[in-house]
Each structure stands twice: as C-alpha cells, then as structure tokens.
Image 1: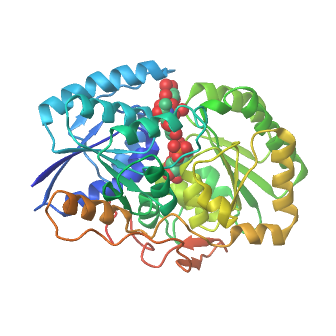
Image 2 (image 1 turned 90 degrees about the horizontal axis):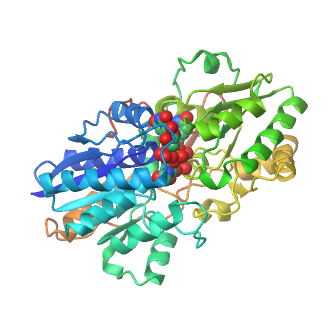
Length: 412
Ligand code: UD1
Ligand code: UDP
C-alpha cells in the first residue's frame, strides 16, 4: 500500500487535483490517499473541497489578507514540515505552479520524500511571466521525481531540460476530468444575476483577471477597453466574477463599477462557473486554467497576457494572445463581435488538453512506478475532437459521458 499525500492550496490546484484525489480514493487496496491544504486561498478553496467532497487531513489555514510571496512561502514551508514529519508519506503529490506547489516540493525534498508533479512541463521561458508561476514550475520540476505532463509538448519541454524520459508520463490535463464532472446541459443557475441573463439574445462576455504581472496599469487598460465595448454593443453583457485579491478588486470597481450591463460579482463556485463558461459567448481572461477549459467548451478566448505557457490552443486557433493594451483588447473583441466567420473559426471545438482520463493515468503511472502494476498507462494523445454536442443555449457543451454527473463526485 502506497501512502500518497496530496498537497494543494489555491482554487485552481483544488479543481485540478480533485479528480486525482477521487481516483486515488477509488483504489483503496493499493493507495492510502491523504490530503493536506495550505489554504493559501480560503473561500475560493473551500467551495471546491465541498463540491468534490474532499476532507483534508491537514489544513494549515495560512491565508492572510494582502499576503506577500514571502508570507506564503514561509508559512507553507514550515507548516508542511510538521505535516510531512507527522505523516511520513511515500510520495508527495503537488500540482502546477503556485507558491504552495513550490513550498510543498521543497519541504518534501528537505525530508527526502519523493515528489510527483501533476501538470508538469509548461513553460514560457520568461522568468517574470507569469510571475512567480513560471519559476515555481521550474523549481518544482527540478525537485520532482515523477512528472505528469498534460501534453506531448510539456513532455518535450521536460526532456529538453534533461528530465529522464522514464520519469515523464503524458496524461492529459485533469482540468478536463473536472469539467466532465461539472458541466451539464440542464444546469440551472441560482445566482439572480445569472438567472436574469438571456443567453439566447444577449452575448455574454465572461471576464476574469488576477495575474500579478498585470496588476495596476495593465488591468486598468483592459477595463477601459471593456467599458468601450459594453457602451458600443447594446446586446453585450459582461459577467465578471471578481477575484478576492483586494489589489485586483479595487481597480475593477474604480473602472467598471456602476456601468450598465456590467455585472461585477463575487467569485463563482466552480459548478456555476464552469456552466457559465459553457453558455457564454466569449472569454477574456489572464487565467491559466480558463485557457484550457474554454477551448474544450468551444468558446473563443482572448488572453490578456503577452505570453502563455499553454500554446496548444493558440496553435489550434481557439485562443488569441492580445496582451493588455486598451486598443488591442478593444480591436480583438470588436472583431469577434462583428465578424461571425472570425468568431466561428475560433469557436471550433478543438480540445488539445485532455480526454477526461488524466487522473486515471496519473494513478496508473504511480502504480507502475512503485511496482504495483506491471504496465504503464497508455499515453494521452491530443487533440480530442468530437466530444461535443450543442446544448440548449446553442453553445457547445461538454460531453457525452460527462452530462448528468452531479457535484460531489468525479466518477463516471
Ligand atoms: C494565487 C497563485 C497563482 C494562481 C492564483 C489562482 C501564487 C503566488 N499565486 O494567486 O499562481 O494562479 O492563486 O487564483 O501562488 N483572497 C481571499 N480569499 C481567497 C483567496 C484570496 O480573500 O479565497 C485574497 C487575500 O487577500 C489574499 C489575496 O487574495 O491575500 C491574494 O491571494 P494569493 O494566493 O496570494 O494570490 P492570487 O493572486 O490568488
Ligand atoms: N473559476 C471558478 N470561479 C471563478 C473563476 C474561475 O471556479 O469565479 C475556476 C475556473 O473554472 C478554473 C480555475 O478557477 O478552473 C482558474 O482559476 P484562476 O484563474 O484563479 O487560476 P489560474 O488557472 O490562472 O492559475
């Protein structure tokens, strides 16, 4: 029996690790799965734990209002030291690129515990973009013993850095597993703002922003572009779940507060958020995860960044890097609103990121590497076309097997 300690701390890590936790829990004869959360995020994390019915054995509760990178690193590192010493797992499993990820990998290294890295190998090769995530991901890769690359390109990145091929498994991204467990054609919103939106006659622009390198002037530029869009198009509605970070929130309110057809709402729980993404017209975001989810739902994405570590959808033409300059954001948004052919080209359902079996592959790879299975899992091969059907609102909604699966479970 292999004892695996899964560590995460923020909303996106929780969403993407939930399918892995559930897959490990299903394999009770071979794995003992324990979860430790740093709670680098609090409310944004807790709603995911509740949705997927995950009960952490440890909760370090490190979040403070306005925390710095130093605060997170120090509190996560010393807190996880105590957890790892008490738990003595055979393996620590971390996800992605947050400061919790890096601190957990470092703590495990200091105690000479092997590290598995889920969503490994994404790179911009720009140390400061995304900041600090690009470096967190690099540093975690150096510390990790097993690398679960979501795509073949991520594997190539790791090979280029000298990671031995036998330590890398191409699994697909677990975010697609999470989406399949969440998006349903008959989903009914409870939020009054979302209930009031007429998805048939109004074009919903779904907006999220939070990246550190965009704080201040770049975000202001984006919000000014949005203001112009909404004033110019009477059928456009902006739904903007505003990140809880006060640095982001203050600027959003100053630039977009009080505008007609601009709904500034609290961060949505993942279940309504994923279903909103499935029904919206267009996504504008600087998020990493949304760049993977929206293409799988057939939604064009304008990426409010200069560079991305997720080039697969860029190459497929379903996302476009527009940066943050007001003129560019405005022009790109206008083009998609005015030119149905340009919109259709981007909305074509191409999903280079996963087939919903990533978590099962992670678990199968662990079993193989630790001698609990004779064969490694079959690798994920992108892209996955044809997993789609057209939902009642006309938007493409994921997928045959995912439809009808409710919260509290990622089993299918
Ligand atoms: C963090 C991650 C980032 C990830 C993002 C996803 C780091 C350095 N940053 O950025 O990689 O892409 O999460 O959202 O690891 N807050 C709350 N409640 C919450 C969550 C946050 O009030 O549930 C507020 C707090 O004031 C907190 C602030 O937001 O201090 C910033 O949170 P933090 O985790 O430091 O940074 P994010 O920008 O969320
Ligand atoms: N998300 C959510 N509610 C929101 C905004 C985002 O549940 O109001 C989900 C989204 O579906 C995705 C994840 O949170 O799975 C992305 O988180 P975020 O953008 O904060 O982080 P990143 O992906 O950039 O690290």
